[in-house]
Image (cartoon, rainbow, N blue to C red; front, side, top):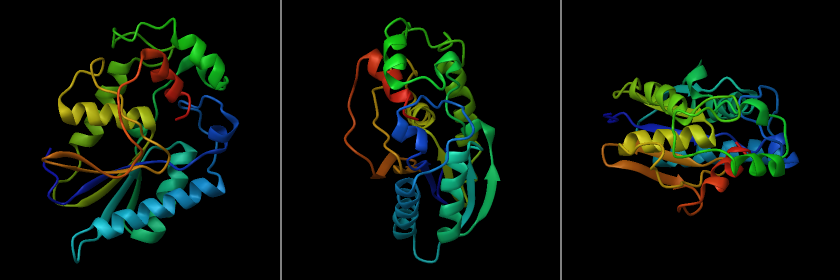
Length: 212
């Protein structure tokens, strides 16, 4: 994907369910906390500082889930642009795990075969299905416009794997905290704000999924 116009990936700010340690997945309702709103504003400032002189954000394309949409609206307030809702940017559908505690989700992760990318998670969506839809959204970005994509942790991890050309089941673990910002380009992904990345066992994979 050519991104001469620049494209940014932003994870939504902290939600109320992040604080309550409840698995979200595609649950629509949880809104941002005040910290989450501040994380969104900080993400906007990072993007503004990274833009080339005279460049302006043209599009803020976001998951329609409330925590992402609220993040996108705050970005829009500070960066401008056109707001577009895109269901392809939603978090992975986690089936029966949604609404359950992190502890329950971690326990369920131990029984899942993460080596099979086509296996649905808890009756929800498979990693392959997630990657397919997020890849379509990323590949359709206008290379001549500055675009911000607002999404979720596992969806962003899938996007990073897609851009690197790595099979989803072989992709190294990437930590994507609330409010993380990455710039996409021909040379790969450049993180403007993020904690350290590394690899992790399968159980941690859904353990972090619970927080998205």
